[in-house]
Length: 429
Image 1: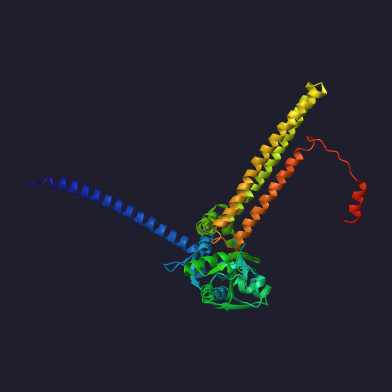
Image 2 (image 1 turned 135 degrees about the vertical axis):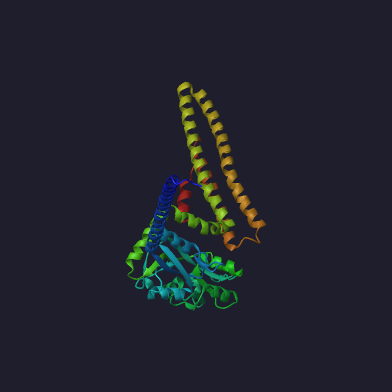
């Protein structure tokens, strides 16, 4: 049993312990409460900040690769779509994409159902409907024909022909504005246009060349090719477009474009979408032209340099001989030796300079003979061009070497019958 004197002491200790426990509990509860308050404040601030970030409504064409298309997951993708996302992200904006046909989405923008389109060519017909950012890409249109059709090469060859374009596209506006005399057939998509042309309907399709090539690749159509000559006056300045009068969003898009161009984001996106496509377009003709254009300046500069060195050597040796040789006989003998040496040097120079040109001419003929079934008419023209220019360079080297010999060879004197010359001039013989 506990004695009566110890009971108050035990109760007092218990009360102290309870008080301490109570104080610790209050402290813990207060700490938890403050922590919850901070957490709720963070959630509230995050909600306010997130809610303040504007989400821009955009729409993309569903079949205009590689600029705009729908990926296997059903989402908008492509060069222009990714570029718009990056530009808006650079100015702290979100973007929500929908997709549809070009004819529909451009009407949606004009009606204000969406706020921006990522790929719109700036044309006179659209100036009163939309406002445009500065162009982020400039390309030209091309004529697509059935493989083997050699009657259509330029826009002038389309007179009395039927040309397919996409309804409302730059190509349709261009044809109506510049070539109203040519019959045009407008369809909903370029996919349909290419399939119609492949099936034998109509004569050609006019559209942006890179998009057309990508579309043919996706459709696995190999019977349609672009003509060699692009349409120079069909220029497409691609921009972001907003509804006419939306100056605030237009300024935001221009700012975003400027930022991603300056920080290198644009170059990264461009390399991602276009570099593989451009690598595939390198042809034999491109390589041949590149090699020839690189060789001609080198050979010409070498010729001039060697002629310059040759003249310097002649001058130095001539002066040296004139100073050291007093007698005319010794001077003539040394000059004769010098001329022989220079003639031999000129022969070596001629051989070394002409050898690469002969190789170019020989290999050009060999390529034309060996690959005559592969190289088309345009390629043969390019090979003929290489041969002609190489032969011209050969003649130029010969003339330069003749020029270098001036002053070293004695001028021959012969008797001339002036009466005979007079008769030839009068009779125009």
